[in-house]
Length: 120
Image 1: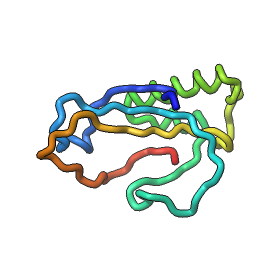
Image 2 (image 1 turned 60 degrees about the vertical axis):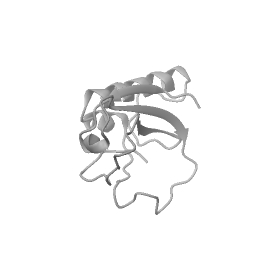
Image 3 (image 1 turned 90 degrees about the vertical axis):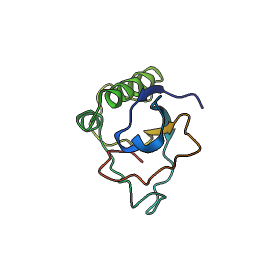
Image 4 (image 1 turned 180 degrees about the vertical axis):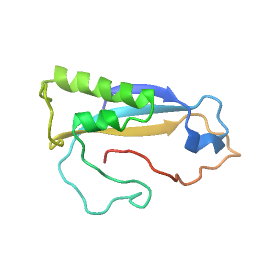
């Protein structure tokens, strides 16, 4: 699949990765066909369905805001999103997948902690 958006950022929670380049995030539009009661990383991540207005309000950083804007542009162009979205999504949802680039072999990844706003 082709990402809806790609952005680079410095992760405060991943500072111990020994990388100067920071992280690169990729956003993909996926159709939700099933919602599971349990999922991997359930103890570290919350699932919350949001309408577009709520999602923008919860963007903590500029890169999150930009990624959501890019997602909306693509969805509007594809005709999959009405101009006025008031209810939580039922068919499409943005999933943000971040992957850190170039990790030194001497480093290890610690488990994420703290509050994160994610859409699963």
